Length: 358
Image (cartoon, rainbow, N blue to C red):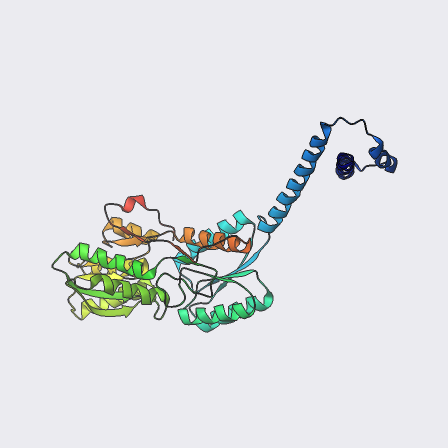
């Protein structure tokens, strides 16, 4: 009796499947199905197999819906200010957006922390699935994260870390994608020690926008690397990441007849300006210049001897990873709290192996 019921259910299931595929046009056919007792016993497993396949297909469809491989997510990308680096970053963001089928909306804060907070709040009201934030400074970044949490909008940070952790890990974030700025600053210190040797010398430090995470942590890493060496930072000034400002700083120091052996810059724009000023004054052979970032101009300056050393990481890769990680999170996949992108040393011996992006 159990076997008969099982077969009846199996045949009924077969009709249900047929209804989905061929319309099951006659209700009489469905009525006759239980009377077909002559069906060979070996056909029952086939029907059961079909049932299993149908269930499996349903589960696969459900899984696909859960992972959401192609969903039109809307991601707000907040940039701190205009630099060549972020032009390359945007190229990586746009490439990832096209790859994953998501919509990107940009906002540039022009290095104004209060403006960036306002931009973030506008996106929260407007409604986005996630905010990818490169903050103007850590303090404003923390405010944005807190406000976003209250609006139930996840935030991923990239390039500029939030909080005091050197790794960039921050409790309120989905993830941080970018470099460990302390490690990056330390690389420039190691380059300086290699260039000046045991004798060391006097250093000028040209910094980026004051109060930003890169400016603070790169300086911290540099100082850690120089500790115990014979290199002394005798003067520091900000160029706001601008070539012309760095050029003017070094020109002024030359006019004041300040003696120094190396100019350490927190970015390649500043390094090219510093190198140009020294070259025009006929002092480039005496004074070393160190940059950071691996820009097109920076790499060319290393080749030309205007800069003696720099670092490199891919801005495009960073932008791509920021969106890739965001999509993974929105799809319910596990993401790491930090994805570190490391800066590596660039010098005249290996410069040809790198391709500038910005």
